[in-house]
Length: 376
Image (cartoon, rainbow, N blue to C red; front, side, top):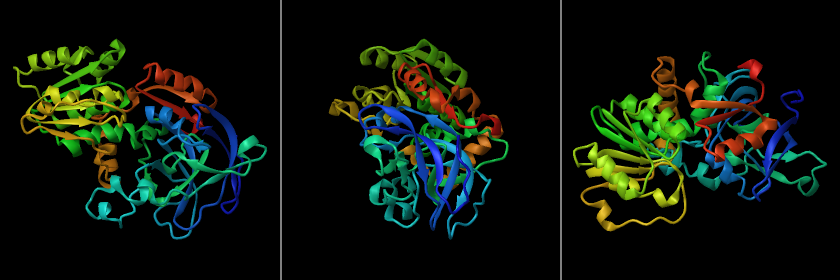
């Protein structure tokens, strides 16, 4: 249970801390008071995605989690527009507004966010903590949302609509933004165009919803799990294909498009070997996108780029928070973007291992950890 403290005092909070060897513990941390430009947030819900599984192997100790929503607990000097009690969405790609990428309008590539400023808002493990006693904790993506309380730069926060439940809001700040944004910002799918989506987890289903919102007339969903394909139909896929060898998939997709291939194809599996398969699914002049963030070895033939095909690896759906989050909020309010249906299961922090097991097994579209469901 979180201990209450004044706005200028450290705050005790439980957090999931990765050990850098594939494991984690739930332990007490102390989150200091916000300094200039910082905000301390009491988390209410945190989304889970495959990046969280990968982060278990990042150098520890690391407070896990990078999707979240909560309430402002206290603010540091110079923070405008945010007050205690305000409901906020946390956004891991935090634009500074001053570096060259931000000046070009590509805030997701902000140089400060991408590692120049990694130390803001560290917390310390409370003793006794074995080998970690007194060791400064890094926070996943400078957020660390799998914790009751975190400390972030003010630019990481977007005020939430009053009617949007926390367990829905929390998944917007990575998986949903990545999928929808890759369609509307990166590929710029137009009404009447055709789309294929390889992988129908949380990101893939968000791609499908983005394609539906953009007015695509044909949306082909591809996955190896029957339950994932069933979900894909509910979210807007017009056709579904069981995952097969790449040659068979190419034949099937081309068969649905009079031999041309689709206008846009998205890889959202997280499997490095499949990264370039979208190039074979698109028509001449089409756009292939790798949106899963997978890293590793993959092979591609130069002929896969014939003719005039583009291959993109957009970061975070080319997110601009001030443009994109209000747009997501409007689509949700109008019933055009289904987030409630995307959340497969809600867990407590003590059930995190079960949540990770479900995520690995493909049983989830999106899983959510809730810290205080009564406030949702």
